[in-house]
Image (cartoon, rainbow, N blue to C red; front, side, top):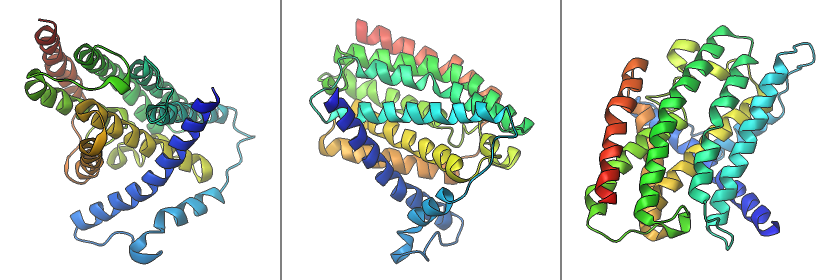
Length: 296
């Protein structure tokens, strides 16, 4: 238990450090994609901009004692923080000596609770638009969870284990099926992390920042940081699934994170009914066919 706590804290610290520069890189790419410069004033080439924003948000505060529904929003924020800590525990344990035999399943279990935190945050924001975005994301997560569960089961059949430390596969099918599964996995993690083109919880152009409209200070920072930590954890998970770690895994990790930045800068938001039809009519049949190919 002590080792798991140490690895979890280490994983959280590494994740926080990574997302500080990930946010900076994303703002730089978004800037250059719109023919402007990103952050470049704080520190050398803007390297300290994320830390300056962190200090600014920490010293802001909001009084909640006169709003009874605001306690639901606090519950949602604390639930999201707890889920991120469990993600970091899985991430840290992978590089330690206490990797669970069911770590892949734990990722699936934790991801299923994310929609509950978004619902609490949207309900406690006292904004019908924020609540609409939270409900839309929660219903979309049902479609996402089905396909993500199929991907977990498919990879576990290939690796004959639910342990992330056992992710290696030697066979000809890896060159045929895994690229397709990997592409579907990227679509799933875009949905899980509420990123463009599946950012139905936020929908900034429609709902003015969506479910986090009424949040400021430390609470907005928690929502913002947890979203990016989830992006980092799932990018790492995709690299483990495809390569099993090592130098090739680092390359996949960098590609996944660049893919998140590129998708936000380039891709338009997909209409909600198209999104649901794609998950149930296209992605799910492809994964079922993959099951039969692996089993046979």
